[in-house]
Image (cartoon, rainbow, N blue to C red; front, side):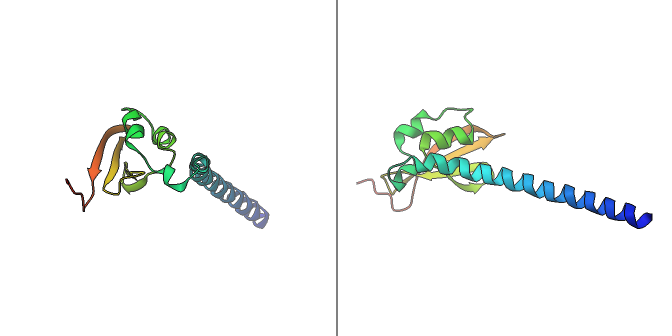
Length: 118
C-alpha cells in the first residue's frame, strides 16, 4: 500500500516538474521569438540598429518591447536594465537606454572611441 502511494506521489511530483519546465521554456521561447518577428520585417540587417530619428521618438515610461518596436531590433544588454543600440550609419555613435522597473527612465547618445570632431 505504501509503495503505491509513494509511486503516485512520485508521478505527481514528476508531472509538476515537467509542467514547470514546459512553462519556463514556453515563456523563454515567446520572449526570444517576439523580437525575431520585429527584426524579420527589416529589409536589411543594419535596420535592426537605431538611428537618431528613432532615438528622438523614445519617451520616458516606454517598455523595452516598445523601444524594440521603434528601433526595429533588440538592444545589447550591457548591465541590469541597461541596453545599448549601435547607430545604423555612424560607427562612432551608440544609444544607451536605461530602464527602471521595466520602463524607460533615461536615454543618452554615447560617443565611441575613435570619434573625430573634424
